[in-house]
Image (cartoon, rainbow, N blue to C red; front, side, top):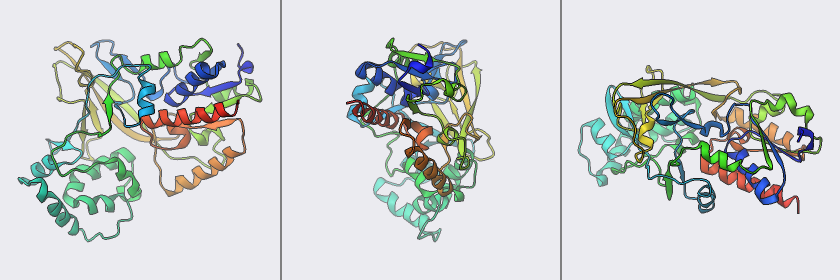
Length: 379
């Protein structure tokens, strides 16, 4: 079928686009064209076996699936099984390893104390009170008012500056919602009802989502180069950057991108965990991934391991990973969203389309909700 014959066209084969394509093909029974600029499906969830070590890894950084949404969990389990992996993160500061998120072990180790859980709150409140911050107005002030300056300086300030590419004072306090803080020894990173890694990786999920012969996937295809070839009345579901969709007519949203540096180590285990953060700003990378730890059920060679350094950098919207946010970007986003309302056959969503820092389960939920709206319009 030529592009002009499709009633439904999806731009992007990540979670948002693939889920909607699956629903349109299998529930509505309609043909759908999926346009993907990369040479693979799955967006940033794409995973493969490393060519030399055989270790399965995620090309765009470690992705942990976790959710408490029953509908999302039932849906994704139609396409994969999950292992029993439970995510734990450690952080290195001045060549010493600490638990992350900050918990009682982190606090006691950092201060050289032996506080009990019932003593932590008063101790942290005393540390926070020293700052004199009563009404925090930005990320830095909010963090210090929660934990005090020493913990913030050690574990949050440098890492945040690297990740977001700016002084933490310039970031909104709302970003702290993604940062747990605990007064016990719990080392879990997530508290969701379900958590794990797909046993065969993420890529087979997308193979199944897009398996219906009604779905035509065009890889290495730029939507903006073939846009004029599509039917004028086609329903376009777009999951790329929303500002790019409208030719940046109101200006560019700010994005962060990621780059990765792979290295094979001639040891069986380099760091003992899947993700090790590096808190100090002078260390250029934010963390090191060691993907062999994501699959405890797999047998990998004990003579080698794969490590991947992650670097954060500014992105102009060519290959963004997550939105920078802030008041200025929010105001710009609202202009694009107002523009979108004027286009009946345009539907925008996903992390890039909505300019929101979605987790995978949130993206699936958004895709299912979007599909419900699309299907209701056909009835």
